[in-house]
Length: 159
Image 1 (cartoon, rainbow, N blue to C red):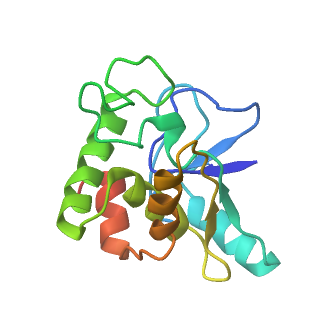
Image 2: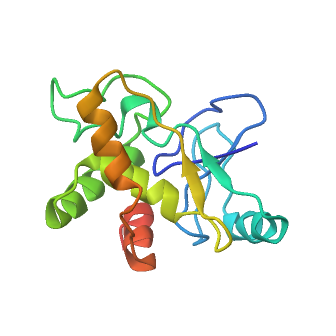
C-alpha cells in the first residue's frame, strides 16, 4: 500500500505501507524507520498504465501540515508524532513560504502537493478529514491548485 504526502513519517503509519513523498517522481530517500520510496516515479508510471491512482490518506500528516507549526496552531514541533522531524519541519516551513506567496494555507499546499504528486493518467487522490465546515471548504479549494514540478521539488528537497 502506498501513501502520498509532503511529510515523511519516521515509522510506518500502517504495516506494509510505503510513503511516496518525493514530489512527482523526483528522487527522494528514506529516513527513520519508515519505508519510503525513492523511485516513486516507477510506481506512478505503473499506476498510470493500470489506470490506478495514488491515494493520499494522510496528506495533512495527522495534523502536522494543517498549520504553520507556530505554538498553539496544531502540529507543533515536539509533538512526538511520526511526522515531527527536522526534515518535515523544514518541508512545512517551505510550504508556509510558498503558501504565503500564493495566498494559500499550509494545509492547502500540502493537499496540492499530494494531488500533484500523482501520475499523468489520474493524478493522486487526497483524503482529508475535518470537523469544521470552514476547513472543508479550504481543503476542497486546494484540489484545483496546480503546483509546478519545480515547486513540488522545492517542497520536497528545498532546492
